[in-house]
Image 1 (cartoon, rainbow, N blue to C red):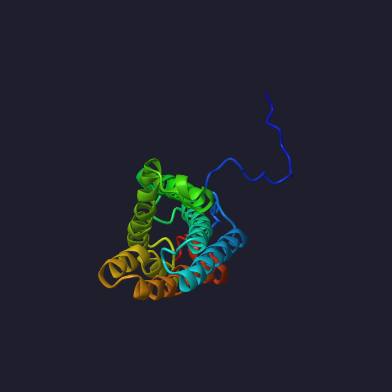
Image 2 (cartoon, rainbow, N blue to C red):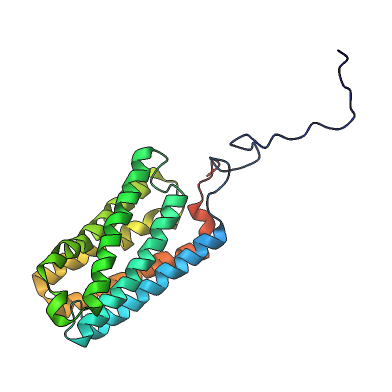
Length: 222
């Protein structure tokens, strides 16, 4: 059989997983810089909302103030979901299956904590303090401790670059700093520590993500 001869250049293959010209591991970044920027704005907005409520009503609140703390806390948790989503998409703590499972587990615990925030913020007084809600309440501090563990792994993995590699260590230490402060010195000081830590930590992290989204996209040349 005669070979078919053509002057047309060979077409580039599109079925390969990694393009030689791509600076990223994998076919391409699984998330765009614009999406990272929007997620950062979401994290910043949620953090500032909850911090403002804490400054005004304290970390616990009373009456209506308590409900405001719960619902603005929910806004903060939605911001954390934005952060987790970016961490998942960029494989911020590694490319192993275990790393992916860890982030999904954190999302599940945070989801249960968010349900508690919503229910505790809207249910009548006689219902919102029911024993059956206690399990969901436990998920609140567990989710924050989980974020602290993620920040350590993120820094060690070094897939995020520059200041964004290290700032999560500040942001995600919120529970490690604020909860002991509340237990040791009480509400009056803890409200200022907690609110200010949110601004310096998570709100600033969201701003950095919005300003430097490319630093979250892993590059072989970094």
